[in-house]
Image 1 (cartoon, helix red, strand yellow):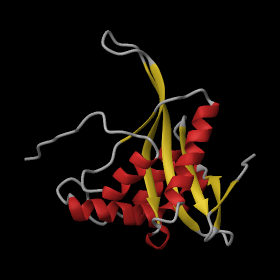
Image 2 (cartoon, rainbow, N blue to C red):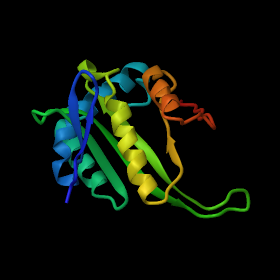
Image 3 (tube, rainbow, N blue to C red):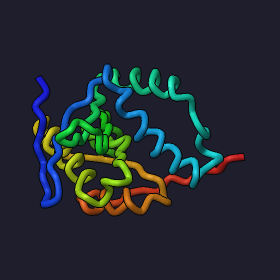
Image 4 (cartoon, helix red, strand yellow):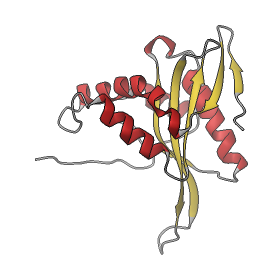
Length: 170
């Protein structure tokens, strides 16, 4: 049973819901916006204008992966304001690192009209509550260097940069 989490600010009320793989098509418009942002800033790294049906198939299959979860922020009218996708990862001990189970935040996207209104924060707070209930105390995320909004959201939620990824492309 999905139990929606109600969240309100002084401006609006939204529900945070789980989005099953069978409902992945709801995420496609926001995924396309998020992808377009990455294409605009890193055109050699991302495929321009991926096919809608290909995105839908890939996203549905990905969301069906065990340990992968999608949360959505929904308006009282049922409109999707934003979404978040995270995965539970079990990392084995190495000689240089202790074993850990962590939540890896893969995607977070919020409709332009609802940015800076607490939607991303509400999604992350619900994710934190869910992983804390599983006794998971580590959340990790990657975000593009150009994405100041993600950097600010992560910092505001207590996530601090711990490494930098650099790449070369021919």
